[in-house]
Length: 164
Image 1: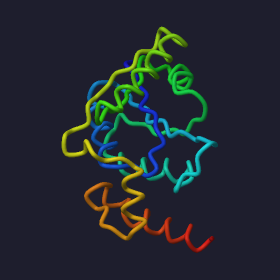
Image 2: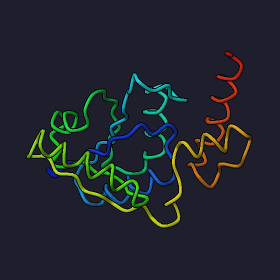
Image 3: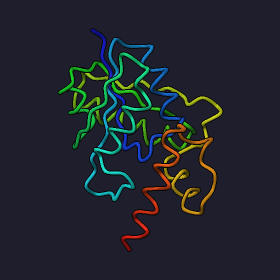
Image 4: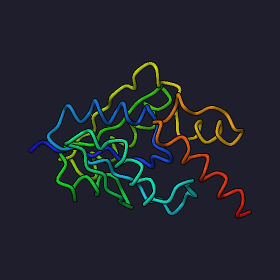
């Protein structure tokens, strides 16, 4: 069985993420989308909420599994029995960082490769950070995230604002 891991924070999941998930799922028997629980960051959504959002937007892709993890992506890939890690590239600036990570991961575990997919041109500008920035000013994010995620982003932002 050919298995890959697509790790990320997915806070929130964007149409760009979904593009990479759909395209990479065509390359493998099983794609595990690893939702990083990074204690160094303060995400908009909890790891459980991000897993749930991803499960919802990928429910029509039969060979995709969503799983939370913490620690190094290369270790997670090994635990999952993956042959490679999938990473999306939007611009040359992404490539520099991702190349360093891929080389580091290769040294840590030579059995796991990294495969880069360039983001479809229509999503090349898009990031979760951009989505949160636009949403924080009440902007329309419907062209950036799956329809089921739009209201949840605004609800979560209002919830966090009310806690302050």
